Amino acid sequence: MSVSTAAAAQTVCRDISGALPVLGRDVTVPLVTGGEVTYAALDYAASAPALQRVWDDVAAYAPYYGSVHRGAGYLSQLSTDLFENSRRTVAEFLDCREDDQVVFTRSTTDSLNLLAAALPAGCQVFVFETEHHASLLPWQNARVSYLDAPRTPRQAVENLERALADRDPQGPALVCVTGASNVTGELWPVRELAAAAHAHGARIVLDAAQLAPHHPVSVRDLDVDWVAFSGHKLYAPFGSGVLAGRADWLRAAEPYLAGGGASRKVTRRADGGVDVEWHESAARHEAGSPNVIGAYSIASACKALTEAGFDTLVAREEHLIRKVREGLAEVPQVRVLSLFGDDAPRVGVLSFVVDGWNSSHFAAALSAEYGIGVRDGLFCAHPLVRTLLGSDPQTQGECGAPEAAPGEKSLNAIRVSFGAGTPDEHVERFVNAVKELVRDGARWNYRTEDGRCVPDTSA
Ligand SMILES: Cc1ncc(COP(=O)(O)O)c(C=O)c1O
Image 1: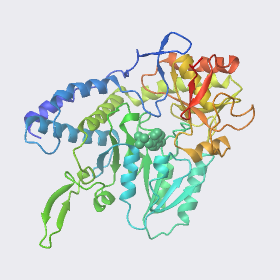
Image 2: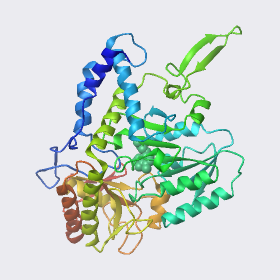
Image 3: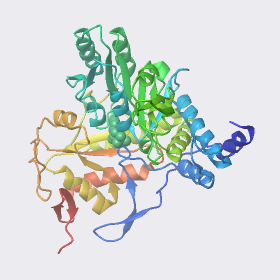
Image 4: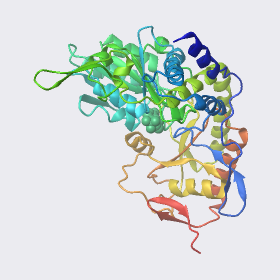
């Protein structure tokens, strides 16, 4: 980095300490029953709102935007510095080892597919059936073993140890595990699973999509080989994700995408073909023009979260979790889904079913009558949700009628999730709305449209 662009990049990368408000605090939405309310965004586990700081940092950089790694101009150099600084910031955020690589991807799904494409020949993969599809499915071309859902963290470690003990000890192996469930919010025993993996000569990748926004993630302390996460769940919705960790498998693999940026030297051969020397750095898997704004927004979020302090963020989130759990516990018709039990440590993600209610109908009423955005369904974790519900649904019930009589099994669930910037009022409104809906029923009629439950406004 030249002195002048280094200084300019430093100015653009200004201090982002302080509180963590998010965008959209004042957005109002119409209610089907009349009037408007401020929107209660309680679907952070799908996509969190942008941090105001991230937005401001991106806006401050926008006039300086330029091509990365390819331009001779000042702004191109500044943008390249910003991109590479962002890589360093992410490495610090994750407490990476000296020789780890940080690859910018599109998302967690992209990161795990990149790692799946970089597996050494003959690699065995071990993954719990409880994973999000992004962690469950990329390994189809490997020798993959799906492990049953454990009912305690201890059982998770035991299940893994048993599976690893039976594996071919000569070949490479990879364990893929989530840090925090996108369904129950429960924390998984990552450090213990990593120790078990390493004791059996396997490596481990941590799906931190739901963990990194809520808790500090230290690659060194957890002793995981790779970490994957998404910007849009980390308050940085600009289309980037991260795969960080051991360089050797990534260096040995064919580039994830072939193209400019990944290649160091390309020459025509005498026989008419083409020889390529690929980069050995992270650029090997970042062919094409990098998403500098996406990378910078993630770095900005990493700094903002670190400077706000995870102790403070976790304490605040615990307060919100307590409010939601205590509120839901007062409604006997509500069953909160859990693998590890009531006392399991968790992040601000909870799924539940309501006796006698179709979850899609319930979620639609929360939105249309209370201005509350939650999610309903199986949350891209079909095997886990079905295990928790004890169901095996092929179809979803029509939304107007209850899908399951009281005491019967539900076909899908409702998920509420929150984090930085969530005010008490949002979770209070949510708890009161649940109580009111259960007590009085919906005030509006709903119908199914394109598979979704929507207010019936035809009357
Ligand atoms: C635990 C977990 N892993 C992976 C993903 C996939 O993330 P993305 O859609 O950003 O690729 C999600 C998304 O909800 C998730 O919750």
